Image (cartoon, rainbow, N blue to C red; front, side, top):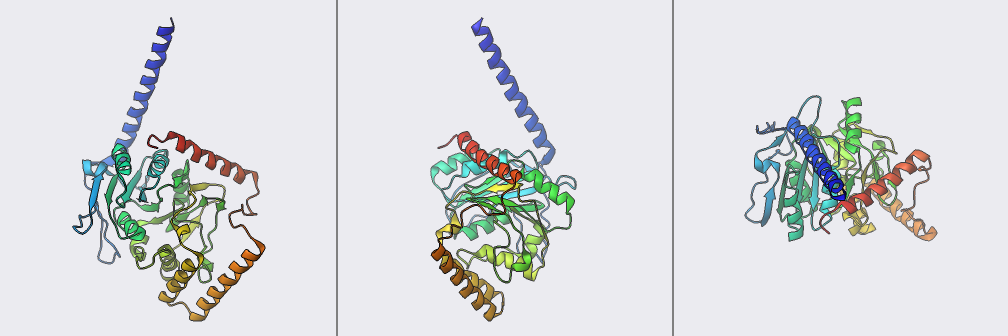
Length: 357
């Protein structure tokens, strides 16, 4: 009798597993094609879109794969926009990031991974998710911004978002981004909340001339229209730690890109601590910020005012021992606190789902 019950449960699990995979496959067929998509590159574009990263004989390539290598491409549709997510990786927790993208309910997502030549374990992970990633390539690059630029040129979606390896896109984030897109069709960029040690949420483009903290983070909480990206251009690789500030400055001041920000309690991404930006000191970042402002022809007196103002603020914070990682005072409503709790639990759940530790 026990054997019969056990056999029934086992068969039931197999049936559910097969059924789920069939449903997912049918959904996938609705957003995929074997026809090579039109890339629509024009002469005025600041960069050209590519389907595959060309081989550079000066850089060692370790691997390449994904659905595109099998001749399968995602489809752009008027009522089902293609959302591209670009991930850059170098020996980081890439599997957590992959799992969070695969957890999204929206099926028309294009997932691009540019790996900077990581270890064998990373290549094994990429190969095991080969039929879930649209395109991945592993080869040496000239730093994070060079790798990011290569990833962006490989994205063919209507909107392009960046999700750093080790960071997660929150459950239902893409559905909420689509909701904002449908409500604001003229917006060039979509922004939202990002959870790190504290919740980061803001969008104040009018403050760009005084500071760069006008929105929280690029990773997983910032999506820019492909046409707008081609107008603004790629990251300037001469900047080591703040090339994203340069892009934001050009986006808002030069090209007047219009954005829309979601509500603070709809958390789009969960960032790991100890990321790339934290590897540079306060003064390294500040000097580069001032250089970016100077290169973009901002008034020298305003730049000096910003420099000494930031130094004075840093000194005051040191004296009163202000902890910038404490939760902001505005996060005090029950809805936001609940969403923070859910996002942190989701991060723990993803860690448990990992197959490769």
